[in-house]
Length: 180
Ligand SMILES: NC(=O)c1ccc[n+]([C@@H]2O[C@H](COP(=O)([O-])OP(=O)(O)OC[C@H]3O[C@@H](n4cnc5c(N)ncnc54)[C@H](OP(=O)(O)O)[C@@H]3O)[C@@H](O)[C@H]2O)c1
Image 1 (cartoon, protein in one colour):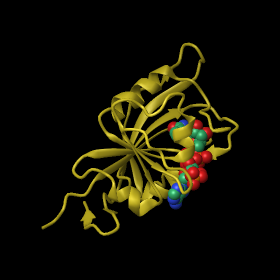
Image 2: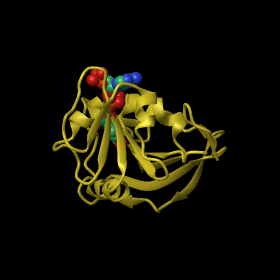
Image 3: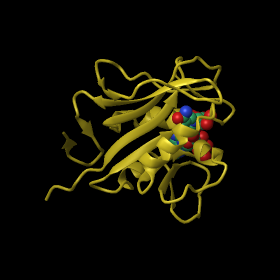
Image 4: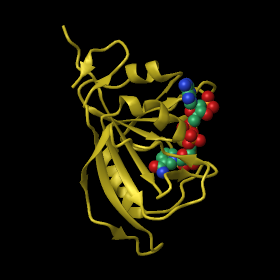
């Protein structure tokens, strides 16, 4: 009998030069983007690297199940599962519902091949950074929708919410059937 494969998406906020972080922190404070992130991920499973988990001011985030990748640390909090690698992380995802890769740079690179959708907040400015998001190749990804550009009143930053989808729609999880 075929088992339902989990659906994996990613959610990220990127600068014009693909920068996403510096000194284990975000590059900007966009309250509307935090609300967007919360609305997308609440009630779902979120998958992240140890550094991103430790960057949260308060953790774990409410009403979300966390899968945290680490080779050295094991978290014991409720709603948090620590995993040692990609296969263990993928095996821990709930079947038949959307889960989200939320960063950071190492984890986006590692899980991009398993993601079918990318929710990308695009910030129209370049930032100095030490962490970057990989390119979504036009041969593999297409823009599905984008809301109009808007301006954050406090910082003056221009940003928009874009959604990209994998063109082939084909994602293979280890040990699972291909998913269309
Ligand atoms: N703009 C955005 O949307 C966004 C979103 C998220 C994060 N960020 C930013 O991104 C930065 C953090 O990204 P990062 O790339 O430095 O770190 P990261 O991806 O959050 O975490 C890296 C850690 O994940 C663990 N890990 C990586 N590969 C593993 C594997 N194969 N098996 C087990 N564990 C593994 C390791 O933890 P151990 O060292 O414990 O083994 C590694 O140190 C911060 O600046 C953060 O603010 C930005």
